[in-house]
Length: 261
Ligand code: NAD
Ligand code: 0WE
Image (cartoon, rainbow, N blue to C red; front, top):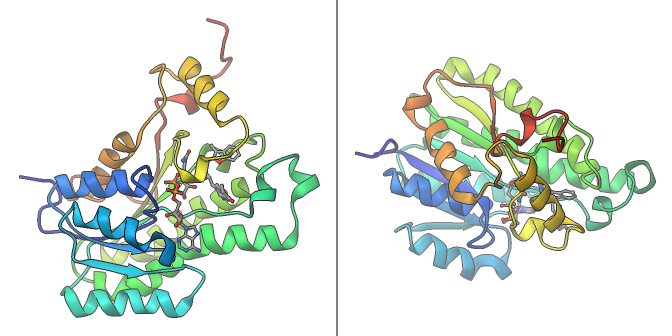
């Protein structure tokens, strides 16, 4: 018996087999969920098709979250295939590359701020809004992915830190608004993981090593660690949890006075 038997889940944010969204999809599939996937653009379609096939998924749709039309089309297509929807996973984040290097006040600009917040934040409530009708009367769950840079100033994370802070606030506002309909809304704040979104971030390797030396568990986390917690949070085992940010970071965030052991 899986903890997601009979549940139908939409997974947004698979770009490769390293994606956190893929770790979540695999864990949800293991736990009995039926999955639908989206891909950002034609370049990524074949990769997502291949990955979807591995979980027996029949539903793979285009979705660039900057398009209201594509958001609406995704839920129209789901409504044509499924009688309802139980879970939406949002694992999308983007800021223009030049926003993620250098000192925040030097590099932030209006367009970089707008893009980061549109793609990384607005898309989550936008999916909630568009998916709401399909989630009625079925103990639904929404999940998004955050990072510690939401609540701590981190080198180079810059405008993405502001976006994640806003995303975490959106978890609370959505939980508050959708709770009366039985829909729970949660976030996972994951430790650094080498995905496409981490590729080419200067000093990413050093960040991983720092976590491995500092986190209570003396390791970094992987997409399986995140996937398993995601499956739990979206299952009825977590029926009493909403509006929360759960850290899946080997305990890194709870440490103070690091490095003196
Ligand atoms: P990833 O590159 O595999 O996933 C990012 C996804 O965002 C991709 O699938 C990409 O297609 C999608 N995306 C970007 N712009 C989009 C758009 N306009 N429309 C639709 N999709 C778009 O990297 P990941 O690390 O798996 O990132 C997933 C989430 O996890 C992000 O929110 C990221 O901020 C968060 N996160 C990552 C880490 C990490 O260290 N990798 C840590 C904590 C949180
Ligand atoms: O949320 C993220 C990554 C988000 C991200 C990554 C990219 C790279 C490619 C957003 N936009 C872009 N734009 C691109 O053009 N993480 C939590 C991973 C990450 O990114 C960092 C980190 C960590 C950790 C950037 C700087 C410092 C630390």
